[in-house]
Amino acid sequence: MKTQSSRIVLAGVVLLLALMAVLADGAARRESITFDEMAHIGAGVSYLQKLDMRMNEEHPPLAKVLAALPLVVRGVHADYSHLSWAFSGSGLFKQYLGEWIFGHWLITRWNDPIATVFWARQSMLFLTLVLGIVLFLYGARIGDQWGGLLCLCAYATMPVMLAFGPLVLTDIAITLFVVLTLWAFASMWRSPSPGTVLRFGFAFGAALLSKFSAGLLFFCFPAFILSLRWRPLRELPTDKAELRAWRRSRWWNLTKGIFLAALVVYAVYFFLSWNEPTDSLGLLGTNKAALLLRRLLMPPWIYLRGLALFAFTGKPPAFILGHSYPHGVWFFFPVLFLLKSSLAFLLLLVLALVVGLVLKFRPVRVAVISEGLELHWRAVWVSLVVFTAACILSRFQFSIRHFSVSFALLILLLAPLPRALNQLRNSGWHAAGAALWLTVALALASIATAVRAYPNYLPFLNSLSGGRPGYLLVADSNLDWNQGLLEVENFVRQRGLTRVLIDSYGFSDPAVYVHEAKLWNCQKAVQEDGGQWAFVSANLIQESHNCLWLLQIPHEALAGGSMYAFQLPHVIPPAGTPGGPPLPEDYRDFANSSFPGDLRLMFLNCIRDPQQLQLTWDQLTAQGAGKQKQEGSSKPKR
Image 1: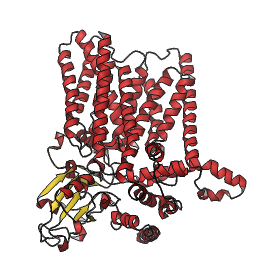
Image 2 (image 1 turned 90 degrees about the vertical axis):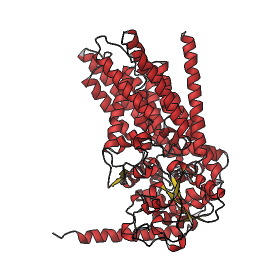
Image 3 (image 1 turned 180 degrees about the vertical axis):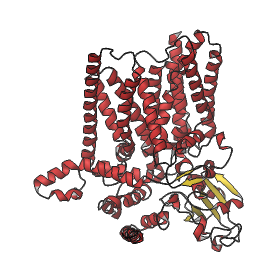
Image 4 (image 1 turned 60 degrees about the horizontal axis):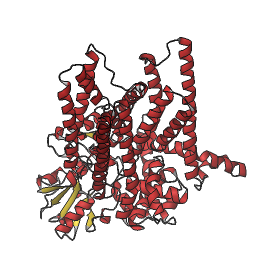
């Protein structure tokens, strides 16, 4: 009977992973390149081809390198004599401007954009599936094989994971390696050995190489250790002297593991920056000894410089439930979590909570965590508290993808549910049988939700949205991330349109996908635009532009509500009049940026003519200096 059950579970694992691969890859094939992928793909290719990390320092390299591997193997072409490459190597903030231009040219000019994006995303899809396998294996060990299958079902059908999993981003990579790190950490704490220390060190190093927010693990470790003082587990020694020795040995192994992780990070940065000029450390001198020292110090210098750039650029305004806030708000991620999770997953979490309360208050104690895995369970829920608290308290709030680690840890909390219900049924709880069938029904409902939402996972909102359009509730990559341009092009072709206006959400040239497109600003419609078809990102209707006036025109939602198609009236009402575009004082900046002017137009000008890079930089520098001078003069003198 047990063998038959194992075969059923194995078949379920294979089918769920196959379903996830088909849904995620199929959705990604229908999507144009998204906002951050433009910079990530170009940077990753340059790391491998040139061993030079001058671009995209604000993110560690691992995910970008993995995405670039199939491209480099296939012989992707990059022109390193291009002005954007030299420009990006001449200053920390210059690379932030140049990386988008270089990435755009690499993907859309020097190579076929469809094939380039497709192959870059295959590595990310592979990581996504590996994470699913890891969640199944860990879930099966915490609970039982049915618990592992339930975790995999929740993960493989989660719209957030299906949307962002195959994209060339850092979120799936950090989620995978954080989960591996936490498991290795708990194993090391339970049974220290050279093997557990090695596994922990390499997993932690990979997490730090995935995303800077992996630094939150430095808070998870002490939180876990303090929790053992607050609520000790049975396997801890009871004798005080023995307990001190027990703790001392584990602290020592943790120190060794962290040191190994640092060595892993250093080695990767050292290799990938081998050819990067060390001029930024020129203060150390130019003799042979100084040049050697500069080369040895480049890895930590690049890492710290990237961390500083990330911190400098990481405070965008938050938009949630139709309102913009100048900084993050505590309810941002809880609301996003409720809106962008499938209802079946939310109900599974509620069911697990109810069953947990029943277990707590029943007179007969039931063990639902597998023996020897109590430390792993503790590491999961303590780290969930740390990562979730960091998200809620952070001012860096604009995308549900930044909640991916918490999603994975929440999924693991479902692992004990089937085992708990079976034991409750055996102990005489009459509702256990119904709860088991409810668990099965919710798992099937999550599959149905994923299939029904295909292929529009990125703008997915559940019925808690009340049927309201996404642009009234969320923004940025929670709704549109420039991924709907292929559907716009299909619309244009089907109607035989020869010239269209497009207000898209990205720094790239929309004409790469929509060949008939002219970049447009829906706030600045003029009479010459009358009678034309216009395509507007859902993010630009209310949050990043002020274009609610367009909704009075008959329109059609594209790409699941990510983009909207409008046929403008032949006579456009004057600005500020009923039915017309807004007055200039009512304009909203792209992505709520404080940057003077249109950011997209600035990048598009540099893409079309790279000679504009230095001129644009000079203008930005002058504007920044002028702003500082104005702020300084406005301060009262003492």
